[in-house]
Image (cartoon, rainbow, N blue to C red; front, side, top):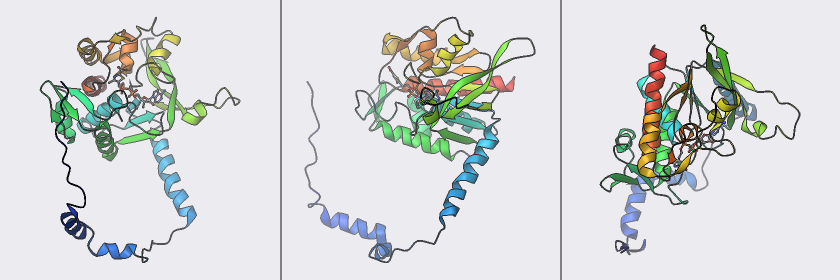
Length: 308
Ligand code: AHZ
C-alpha cells in the first residue's frame, strides 16, 4: 500500500519569531542599501561587450586545438568531463553542447518528475561531488535531478582546464588517415546551433573546426540531434549499420552501457545512451547510475589513449 509520512503542518506564522531572528543575522545592515540607496559602480556599454567578446573568442581561438573534445553535456558527458579534468588538469578539455542549457535529460528524473534514482555503486560519485541523497538499499535517490546536474555542472565549469561552448552543435566529424592508412576521427566540425538548425532556410553557412586526438561523443539516444556521432559513422562508412537502441530493461541496460564504453573507431569514444544506438543495447529508463559510470569509464579510456 502507498503510505506517506505525515507532513509537518506548522505554518510560516508559527515560526515567525525564529525566522525573523535568522533573517536579521543573515542580512544585517546590508538591508539598508535596498531601501532606496542601492548604487552600482559606473560602466560603459562598450566595456560589457568587450569583456565578453575578448574572453569568448580568446578561448575559441585557444581551443581550435584541444586535447579532448566532449560532444554533449548531458549526465554522461558532464560526468566524463568532471572525472577527466580532475585526474588530468594538464589536458585542454573542450565541451561542445548543442543546447543553450547544458545538462541534457538530467534536469528531471522520469516522466517529468523531479527525483533522480541512481543504482549503487554509482552513488560513490555523488559523495565525491557532494550531492546529498536518500539511501534506499540497492539504490539512492537525489531529491531533485537538478541538484545533481547543477552541482556537477558547477564543479566542471570551475575546472581551469575545461571550456564549455554551449549553443554550439557538432555538425560533422573530421576523419584523417593515420600513418598506416587507417581512418581516424581527428576532430569535430562545429557551428552555432541556431545556424545548424537553419541550413534548410539559408544558403550555405560553412562551419568551423576543433581538432583533438580524442573525441568523446555523449550525444544521447536518437533524436533530432541525438546519437550524432554513431549515425555519422554509418554515413561515412566507418560503421556498417547502427545496432539501434532496444526496449527497456534496467538490469541488462546499465551494465551493458558501462562495460561497453570504449573507443569504437580510432580517436572516437562513445559514452552514455549514444552507445545503445551503436551497440543495440537496451535502454534503462530513468536510472542514471550507468550514465555516471560510463562517463567515468570514458575518461579512463581517453587517458589510456593519450598515454600510449
Ligand atoms: O543537447 C544534447 C544533450 O545535452 C547534446 N547533443 C546532442 N547532439 C549534439 C551535437 N552537438 C552538440 N550534434 C549535442 N551537442 O548531447 C546531450 C545528450 O544528453 P542526454 O541527457 O540526452 O544523454 P546522456 O547519454 O548523457 O543521458 C541519457 C539519459 C537517459 S536516456 C534514458 C532512456 O531513454 O531510457 N535513460 C537515461 C538515464
